Length: 160
View 1: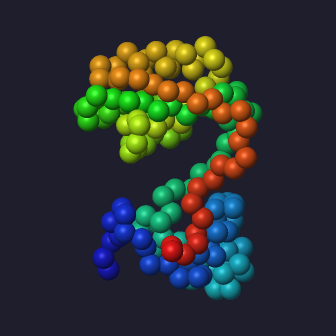
View 2: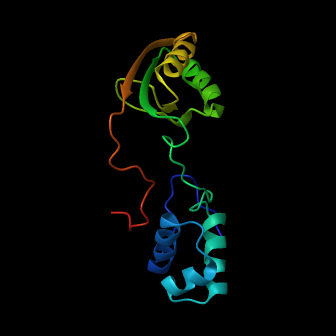
C-alpha cells in the first residue's frame, strides 16, 4: 500500500468519515461505541482507526483544554514579518513554549502567524520582546482576541 504524502488527501469513505466525526467530537469513545455509530463490528472499526492513524489522517488523540480555566486568558495572534527564510526558521524555537499553540508560515503581509495564549499582558509583553529581539525580525503585529465564537480542527467532510 502506498503511504499518503502530507498534502495528498487520503482516500476516505463515508464510514471513515462517520468514525472521524465521532472521534473529533469525543476522542475517548470506545470501539464498541464507534461500531454502533458506524454500523460495523468493533474489530472492523479498530482496523479502520489503525489505518487512519497509519495514513496520518488521525495525528493524535488529545484532550481539548480550556485555556482560560488553566489561567491563560489572553489569546493573541501575532503576525511576524522577517527579513529572511533563516529568520523565519529561527522562530521555530518558540514551538516548544507552552504559551504557543500554533505556528504557521503564511503568504501575505507577514511571514509567520503565531497563536499565543498568555497568562496576562505582562507575560505577552515579555514574549513579544523575545520575538522582537531575534535578528531578522522586522515587525510584529499583535491581534488580541476579545471573544472566541468557534475554535476547532478540520471536519471530516468530503473535499470539494
